[in-house]
Length: 175
Image (cartoon, rainbow, N blue to C red; front, side, top):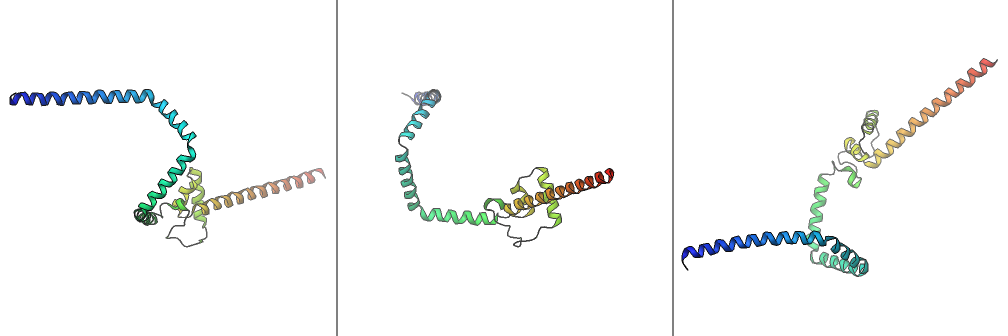
C-alpha cells in the first residue's frame, strides 16, 4: 500500500465516521421523540412510588455536598451579599429594605404624594414605584392605602354635605 492509498483510506474513514455520526444522531433524535412520553411517564411513576426514599437521598446528598463544599458555599454567599448590598438602591423591593441614602421615617411631601399617584395611574407596580421614589415597598403600599382612604372620606363628606343641602332646600320649599 502506497502513500496515496493510505491518504485515501484516511479520507474514506473520516467520511464514513461523519456519515455514521449523523445517522446515529438522527436515530437518537427520532428514538427520543418517539419514547419521550413513555420515559416521562415511567419517571413520574417511579418518583411517586419512591418519593420518601428519593427525598431522603436528596437531603443526604445536599448535606454531604454542603459539608464537603462549606467554605466554597460560604465564600460565594458572602460575595453575593456584598454585590447585593452594592445594588440595594436599585433593588429596594427584593428584601424590603429602605434605600441606604434615605433617612429613616421621612415624612411624605405633597410632591412625593403627587408623584406616587401619577406613577400608580401610569400602571407601575408597587415595587417599581418604590424604586422610583426611593422608599420601601411597604411604605409605598401603606401610603397608597392612606391616600385612597382619605379620598374616599372626602367624597363621603361631600356626599353628606349635598344630602344636607338637599334636605334644607326641600324643607324650605315645603314651607
